[in-house]
Length: 365
Image (tube, rainbow, N blue to C red; front, side):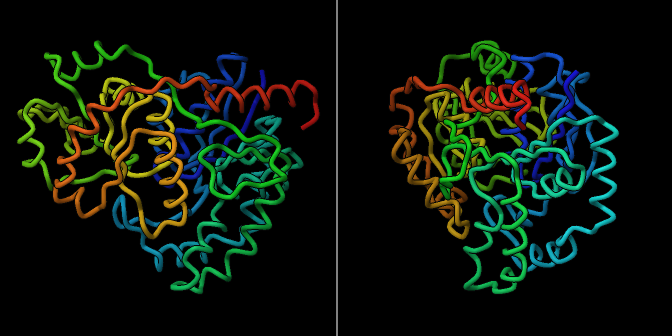
């Protein structure tokens, strides 16, 4: 039995999605792995994607990231306040986590931009692997002009990230590092069920196109439902829009946690509308779908992700104002008429799992 720790940022579901994709790929290659997952991401997210016997969830605040007011707006003063209470890490916390890693016989610590995992691994004398398309010190630098208090946090965080024993970067990445051990294609969870089965379970009985509207794991109250109803020939799937699965005209409303696996919803769609976040980009990329994306103008990552999507997708940029007003539906014809792209590259999750197992096998970690 191979025991691996995984420290995952709880900021949205993007980091957890990428981590699940890596864990799925590792299990496909080596079934006798047990993961010790350290995060505040709810347990159901992993239960829906992984065999229950293959992981143990440790409820731990592995990261602060950004405090969000809404899916598209962050609360910077609250973020700074939380960071000051959290970082630098208390020696007692690191000692406790190091003991847990040793007791669990973890042979390596994987970190999806959660710096706590790197520090805990170092305290335990266990190798760490950083997996990222950005790090928080880089994100916080983008706010220095308006929030200079981040300057007290950035150097220490940057130092922790540099202490990782191995460094993996995933496309679309924000700050390429010449010291990275591996750069991968987008990392995405794979669909489980065929589109026809998913549509039938959703209650979509005809052959009309379906469009997924997703905000990356952050619940949202959609203000433009009446606008969507006007396009009666199109089905719209809206995770996080209701407390239960229900159909209203051409709207399929789903709870934050539903019986539907998110990659299956993507694969059952003809186009996706969503926040410009890593997991959505990766899942839409591998599905080859048209993407109406909503940038986050204040987020340093956003212009780089936008450029990647514009270059590699059939895509349309939608402002947050147009999204909330429903004006974006004027782009539906263009999105639905775009051809589905065929990707001839591997899933980045497989590149990562191959790297990890190769190095573990060679005992070079």
